[in-house]
Each structure stands twice: as structure tokens, then as C-alpha cells.
Amino acid sequence: MTRHLARQLGLALIALAVSATSLAQLKIEITSGVTDPIPIAIVPFARGAGTDAVDVAAVVQADLERSGRFKPMARGDMLTQPIRSEDIDLAAWRQQRNDFVAVGRVTAAGARASLRWNWSMC
Image 1 (cartoon, rainbow, N blue to C red):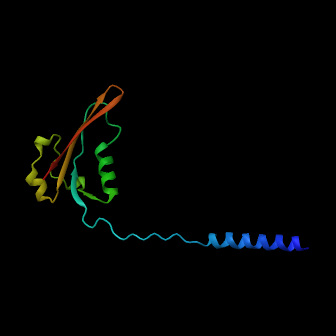
Image 2: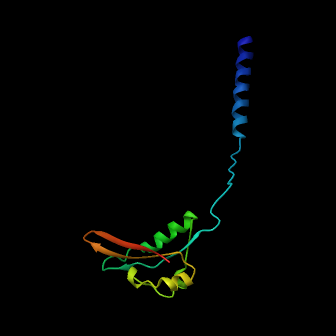
Image 3: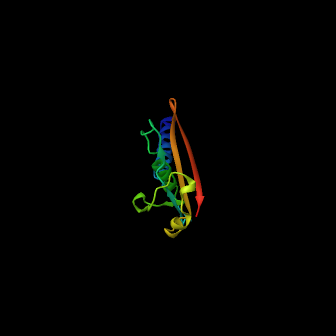
């Protein structure tokens, strides 16, 4: 009988311990973050033949925006869409409140695609 009582007491203690841990709560406290994301413009990249599958500039823009550190300019707000860094009118982009402008070109290289892009600081 003592063994039976000890066994029941042991099981009760285990059940109590398991139920106590199952009531634990996860608490996440965010104490700081990015308050002023960097304004940037990711101009749609020029594309060569056979590279229409993925809009690489949109992928880059979405990744940077999700990081929370950047605030990309909407494509519809872009006055021009240069394809080379030499074509960027930095004063115009700065007037639209961008700190950086990215331009690029995607070209096919056999079964692969090649990407060249540049950042320009406004």
C-alpha cells in the first residue's frame, strides 16, 4: 500500500510539474527599433532577352523594406527610370527625398542570369 501511495504521489507531482510548465507564457518586449528608415529608390532593372521571369528590383526592394531599415520609393512616384548610373539626375532624386538610388541590368548568360547594379548617393 505504501508503494501504491508513493507511486500515486509521484505521478501527482509529475502531473503538477507538467501542468505548471504548460501554463508558462512567452513574453517578447521590443525596446527599440528603426525610427527613421533610409529613403531609397530601387529603379526597375533593365532586362535583356530571356530574363523576364523575375523582377529582381522588386525582390531587392521588398527585402530592404521588410528589414525595416529602408523606406523604398513607390515606382509610380518615380519621375524617370534610368538604367545606368550615368543617367541618374542626383538633384532630382534628392528633391524627391531619396538618399540613395539603385539601378541595374539583368542579362541572360546561357542557362543563368547575370545581374549588375550600382548604388548612387544623392
